[in-house]
Length: 498
Image: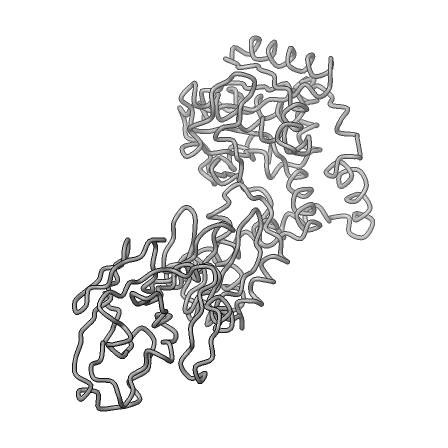
């Protein structure tokens, strides 16, 4: 099948564009982009696309780069196509954003193409990645330890928002920021066409592409693959390029199936999700197959760090192991400042400084809250309240109920006094935990021994009487001196409720 027919077939099969669409075509001046532009610009009339040429001079190759820009501008004029030709100091952008030159160029190029599309009202951007680029990409991802998403390689069509680029505010000189990523699609009509066929097409149609000498520089990782590794692999299998591309196709289909399963599983195991944190049901997540446990963790990282291109396997595997048998408060470090924290019956993936608090009666204030006795005391910024009533000692039937159980307690009314308060812990706080024979213990030490998560400790309510004596570390243990005894005349009944 002729190259033009193959490109037309790819466009129709993958629904890359429809007749009458306005398409921004990224043109570097090399054989791939020159071939793409030639095929799309009327050589296949049934495509009937409105094309706009876009070229960005990266200022990385001196006069050669300037000559490339002039070549593309003249070509667009000769072919009667509108064009936007601009330049960006990519080396400077790489220094400012602390990126490798190749990554800085990639971000700058896509930001430029997206902005041009927004200016002319286009929703599609065409680039000239070919079949050999696909082979190189898959091998590169494999060498870097990618999962299934990376082994798919490039796709014929990709929403720009899925490219994991932080280009929403990426500035090129004094140009405005990119704001239309959500509506743009990047298409690759040449993705199934080998480089040799493209070069033969250019020769057949007397096209004279520009030559980029940097493509020979094997200090660049991709160039080493192209000029050294892949030719070496061909000595083992002459069809290695096609084998790798078939692998990408198979993995891509498997990945789509896994994605569908992952989306269903996500809804089953995620309790809450915001822009800053994802909280999972711990027991439900632990019951998942290993593949789903890994996949849901990767998805949480991706949703919280959209621009992260590579999620390290070691990070995910370490988190899986900690979650398998980790206790409340255990943590796992994740990429780009994310932290996984295990709660009582949930775990949360969030920023390191995100306050992970459970749905418990916690005190979200530093001030003391007077307790209504008897009555109902609402906790600030909470759906929880402390209910209190007072009754004669004779109403206590079961002596086992005279100590605190979870978020309920029965205490000696004389010890509680008439003006108790709820407050958070303070430096130097001490109490005598029930069951320790009146032995005094620092509250901070008690919380550590009880494995109360660090993020919760400043919010555990302490019930304190008017003399400053801690009566109850709420939810955990009352003070020995406040317990109900044979000499107790009245009992304060306390219970947290919503």
